Amino acid sequence: MSDHSGVGARPAALGEQAEWVWVCARVCKTRGPSAREARGPEPSRGRARERANARGLRVPVRASVPAGEPGLIQPSQEDFGLQRRRILMYLENIWWEREAPHVQYERLGADVTLPCGTASWDAAVTWRVNGTDLAPDLLNGSQLILRSLELGHSGLYACFHRDSWHLRHQVLLHVGLPPREPVLSCRSNTYPKGFYCSWHLPTPTYIPNTFNVTVLHGSKIMVCEKDPALKNRCHIRYMHLFSTIKYKVSISVSNALGHNTTAITFDEFTIVKPDPPENVVARPVPSNPRRLEVTWQTPSTWPDPESFPLKFFLRYRPLILDQWQHVELSDGTAHTITDAYAGKEYIIQVAAKDNEIGTWSDWSVAAHATPWTEEPRHLTTEAQAPETTTSTTSSLAPPPTTKICDPGELGSGGGHSIHFLTSVFVTLVLAAAAATANNLLI
Picture 1 (tube, one colour):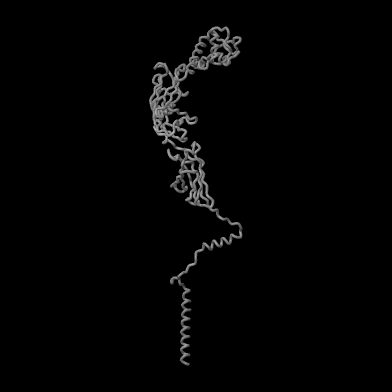
Picture 2: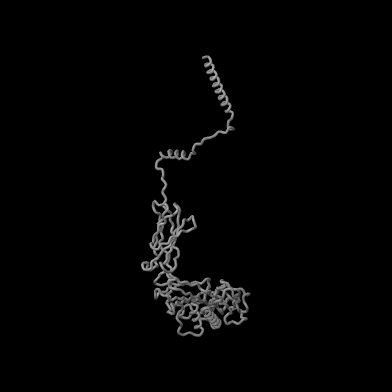
């Protein structure tokens, strides 16, 4: 009957040699050697083949398979000593590889010396990091020297015996920084139910940190429930409303390289700050080119707007300008803007605040809208087009003007006018003379 390793059960009666072979098969989860391996190590490869056999436990022996143990090998007497040494070497490697590596934290920029476990200083060793060989010039004897640590130095370091490649020691190195003073803030967006506190580090540490939060109301310790979604937030329920006793929240942070703390003290009413109003919508008002109708909803996180009403602050501006216009509203969730620029797109936001205590919320998500504009009239028949074009053209023609001629503008055509005037003058003179003569005769 076979076990999970794929190797048969331990034979009932085994000699010392067969028992070592059975142990080998149990550990290696392998069966007998290949035909080439059964021929034994090649003289030309010698030591290299022996190392490979020790690592993979490919046992090069000439053997016969005992009854009841298919695939298992029975070494000859002359090969038993070598077989036993190889199994011991393999089991030693298995023990080192299965041993949890030593975890070590070091500060960014520091120098560090990694010893090769219990190996002597002058032991011949080779170091690897994440499976890659390290340069010999990084060694001081059997010790590995790392200078001016960077984040890229983090990794799994392993020390091997240079000749046999036995694993001697493993170090899991983490490079990071001690924590700076955390940033802590508390806020009540669900007044009067409770408040929450959140925290973060001003700079990363690159290694795991542990936070511990303590909340006091006077001398009474209050429970701070961890937020299920945000790991750096916890919630506290108000035990006494309108209390004049101050709250004190302290937080400590620690990691393998250091620790730090901070604390804040506040009154209940100073941290009340609602969430922004929701579903802000702006619409044009038909036939009113300077009006916009704005509506919104009370934040859904505010638990009792009837008992603890909110007031609102509205700001708006056209996109072409940077200056905001403001309107404060004591109640209601709607407002009509009456001084909008016709045809210009507007951006509108709303904030909320408890009527009596606390501070204004952040601004809501922006809404955009453009006031109503009259649609242009379009032509409906082709017959109207020539008339419209003609009237448009005439309406665009400049008005008539009276032109005063410059004497210099008279050209050769001016001579004819002079002769004509002279003829008229002579005719008039002659006519006057004839009339005078007739009067004398009479």
